[in-house]
Structures are given as structure tokens and as C-alpha cells.
Image 1 (tube, helix red, strand yellow):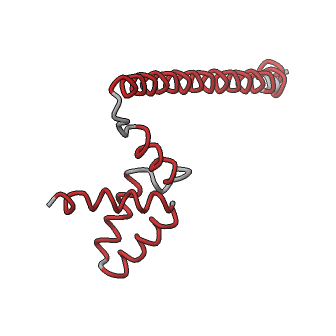
Image 2: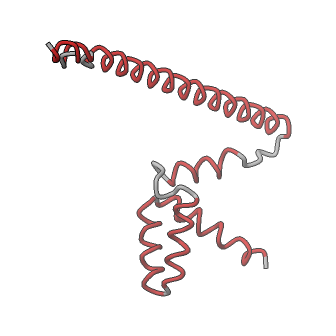
Length: 135
């Protein structure tokens, strides 16, 4: 019964190790055999971001090896702490990059607005005033 419950995980790992092409082939075969199966695979690929990520194999490698117990509890605790710390650092760096992009976007937008304001013709230069027309 245990192997029946784990076959989807084993299939996912097998496809991840072979990359995005294997997922696409499985989806196409799913559409050919039974269209709801192909549709379910497509939905799963989009939901799990497999369609848009760089490589399925990287995710499978990280999942299979980074959380596997070594049998030494002290080392496993050290590894878990290090992975947590690295994850925190990655999140902090991604937040920093987001703030940097937002600051750059704001700077570029402010520059655009300043250039636009300088380039806009003033109302007095483009048309004569009503007083000048009446004379």
C-alpha cells in the first residue's frame, strides 16, 4: 500500500530529473490517451511553476539531497540551521533587489516627468492671448 501512495511522488521526481521536455511529453501523451489527464498535467505544471522555471532537475536535486537525513543528529541540526540561514539571506537579498528595482523605476519615472514638464509648451508662447487678438 505504501508504494501505491508514493507513485505520484516517484513519477514527479523521475520527470523532474529528465527536465521540462519530459513534462511536456507526458502532458502531450496525457492529452492523446485521455484529455482530462493531459489537462490535469498542464494545470499542475502551471501551478507548480514547472512551465516557467529554468530547470526541473535543479528543483529535484535540491529536494532529494538537501533534506535527506545523514543519520548524525548533530550534523542534521547544523545542516537544517545552515539551510534556514541561507534561505533567510536569500529572502533578504531578494527583498533588497526588489527595493533597488523600485528605486530605479521611481528615479526613471521622475526623470521622465521632469523631461516632459520641460518639453511641454507654455500656454502663453503657443497662442496669442485674448487681449492681443482684440487689437
